[in-house]
Amino acid sequence: MVAKINRRIVLKGTLAAAVGYLAGCSAGKNPPTSVSRPGFTPVSMAAVDGRSVVIADEYEYQILIPWGEPLASDEPAWSWPPTADAQTQQVGIGHDGMTFFPLSEDGRHGLLAINHEFGSNPHVLGTAIPTTHDQVLASQHAHGVSVIELRETNGIWAQVPGSRFSRRIHVNTEMVMSGPVAGHALVTNRANNPIQGTLNNCANGQTPWGTYLTCEENFNFYFGSDKPFDSTEAQQRYLLHAQGSFYGWHLFDPRFDLAHPDYANESNRFGWVVEIDPADPSATPVKRSALGRFKHEGAAVVEGPDGRIVVYMGDDQQFEFIYKFVSSGNWRDMRAAGISPLDEGTLYAARFDEEGTGEWLPLTVDNPALATAFTDEADILVHTRLAATLVGATPMDRPEWTTVAPAGDVYCTLTNNTRREQPDAANPLAPNPHGHIIRWRDSDSFLDTHFTWDHFLICDDVYETEDSLGSPDGLLATHDGKLLICTDGPQLEDKPNQLLVADTATGALARLLVGVNGCEITGLTTTPDWKTLFVNVQHPGNGNPEITSFPAPDDGKTVPRDCTLVVRRKDGGAIGS
Ligand code: FEO
Ligand code: CA
Ligand code: CA
Ligand code: CA
Image 1: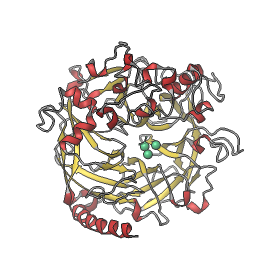
Image 2: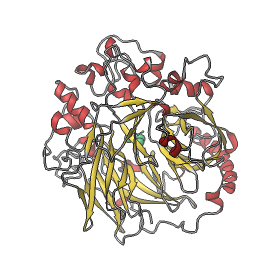
Image 3: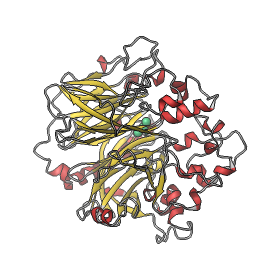
Image 4: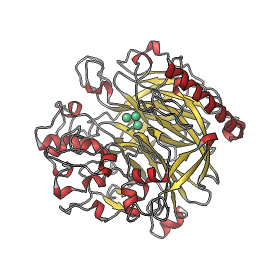
């Protein structure tokens, strides 16, 4: 009880500061006239049983691309558990961040690039520990990314048969690394093996030049060893240690064995943002090292007024940081000169100060705070977390998705932090079991190092109300002043995770959709007219058919499968309205 009272005192002070900021913030002062309360009947949690998805009466959904569906073909047909070979030609598991890239002007035909974040061994393989190399390969091939060509015909979305675009990218796909770390000793192994694969692909982004960004999050879970292994200070900061593997890949694949001398730097090759060209199936994915190495949640890209691009990113771990990258020049000029705007620029970490101001701190070799600790820019980028600590960035409550609203405000979900003991201005609850959403605005339209900030939502304030939500995660700012918010974590009365719509002008919340037992709701992308939303049901039932068989009819025995939902208003209106 005492803890609760103390938290409230801290919160009051922060809200007072936030109100001051809101008065000077365009989103609070001059809300666009199109902003309105969501015009649908919010789903009541009392009507939710967790066996199938529940959506607001004014909306409908269609199930699309479940885990294991063959790509652009009827073969290889789904069976469980999947084989390693079949899984390279089927939709992966762990549907997460995704982007719809339209191929037609009406937006009814396009490419969906979608992350396959993870699937537990029991869910994918039916066993906790793999006992064959083939099982390890099946798990590896279920991870990564799919590019899928989709078309809507008479209101039904489906894969385009025989698509030349549809493809899988997984843990064994050939990659390259670019930027300051490319070819560096820190990412070179004695085995001299090529850069290969992407994993734990969490949230995402897309560039103005039409490529997809997939973000590698909890890469430490895939590395381990059954031999003695002393991790370095840097490895410990990334939670890389001998007992760390949830997957046991190291039992059959030496790349993931932390103690194997031939692959000593393999773990430095993960934790990056990877760029994929969805329109060119022959293009090799590129790990863009200038964006830093951490547990990348997502990458929200926006163009500054002079054509430089800015990428906002969160590092999802307790007490880790929020980052931004600014390209060195106008992206069109850089690309015309054959330079990727994601290879040359400055990476910053955020310091949130009292009274709603903040500063972006450069992670560069000429920053005096970093001069003696690192040998070169590559050393800083491989060890981004250590550099951000040295410059004095603010440890946050697990930064998840970021999104940039049309008015220029940037929002970031801070999902929760049960270990916080000391509150600060930006993270005002200690502990913070239900999370919050922070909002900032950079001076000079994204380009300056100064910013102002406030709290958009403290979930604890609404947790015990009809608008209850906890552990906000997926986030998308709409064209008309709303926020779509997905949750991933404990909800009131153990109800499933959900999708809500928030009005950024009034803060009003409305529940649009509720998932099934055990699942996370995540991944948000729309058609260009904002009338069709794609959103994912990730790990339904955590793979346990006794609690749901979704998306199959609920029979208590069919293994549930991750899938995408196509969500629309029945009256054809915009998503969130
Ligand atoms: Fe993959 Fe932090 O969620
Ligand atoms: Ca997430
Ligand atoms: Ca999460
Ligand atoms: Ca998650």
